[in-house]
Length: 214
Image 1 (cartoon, rainbow, N blue to C red):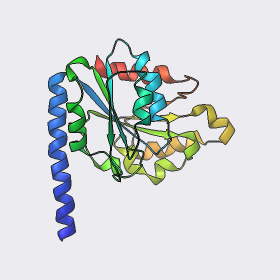
Image 2: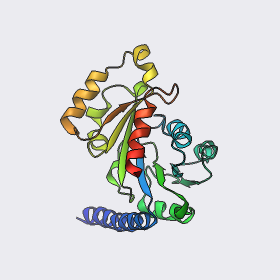
Image 3: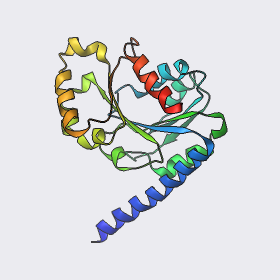
Image 4: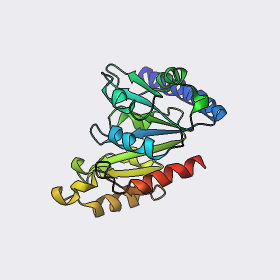
């Protein structure tokens, strides 16, 4: 029973911080998205291509990683409003960590804030950070079975991005299987197929984001 109470306490505290984060973002008029996926799915590359394309929409990023500032350094070329959050051994960002990250940003300058969560297909899906929308990524090299294996990540997403589609033919990726699995767990979220490397399909992603800011 003690373990159950501890877990409930942690989640309640996190939810309270998340609600405070969301209220703060609402007051500033900032739309916030939580990007979640396995490591190496292409979140950073996606944002590198997305942020300049959305101009004049002003974008900021909170970057979650266990160690290093490498992703933040890459993204600083696209926007100066980047904050790195290192979790140490933590497998996901918490709402309290996001709150500290918000302290480092001038929210009055921003229209859109991306939270690039720690690469993990399990833990991040359970923690509200105060975001308005959740985006789940699946990259072609990961395999077409991931939606069925990790349904929690995809069932609560507001948009799902299939990334690195330039590798579909090379790797024999079964896109139809992904669509079939999504049809069972999430029919509301659009599936956007794109390749940040080649730019194919990014217009649909950018249009979806602009719709959130209008």
